[in-house]
Length: 220
Image 1 (tube, rainbow, N blue to C red):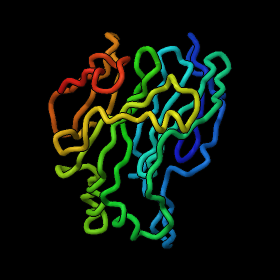
Image 2 (image 1 turned 180 degrees about the vertical axis):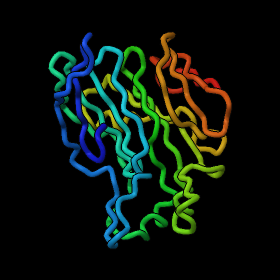
Image 3 (image 1 turned 180 degrees about the horizontal axis):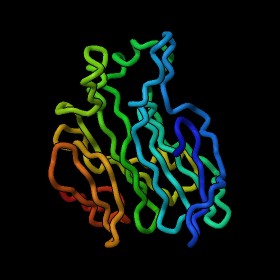
């Protein structure tokens, strides 16, 4: 993911990474460009992850405060991304001006993302970005995720074939709570998905990611 709104695909061979790339514009800007002179761009809204499925045939990413979860088809041989679907987004959109940062201080944003081993389920963690309210008070100690942050774990059904159906398939696997400050997701070689949690010195896991809903077996 190439800041601020481009996905670049590079060919990887036994000789290394090809310097040439395919570039795909995302039709929105991942940064918030503030209107006030001299204030620049606020990089802290660029939270999120980008992941490829095991077969390499699909790519998904989360895009921070705008709340979007994007899903693409991918051709590993040509490096072409296609069939973009936006399966989630936030009710909050930046309109310019800093006051919106306070307005959306309790927004829920996606962060971690991962495919199940069979590629029929997509998992996403979301968190309340309550810490945004502190940016105006003291930018040097800005912290988007803090002890009051709440998190949740969602599941989407990728066996469905269109954007609206995938959106509607969303299931809450782990409910929103300060006990669930779930962040990064990573599929392991054992087929389980491992879940990082802010403020904890351990990882949780999804024991059966191919299963629907609570049957996926989230284990703290």
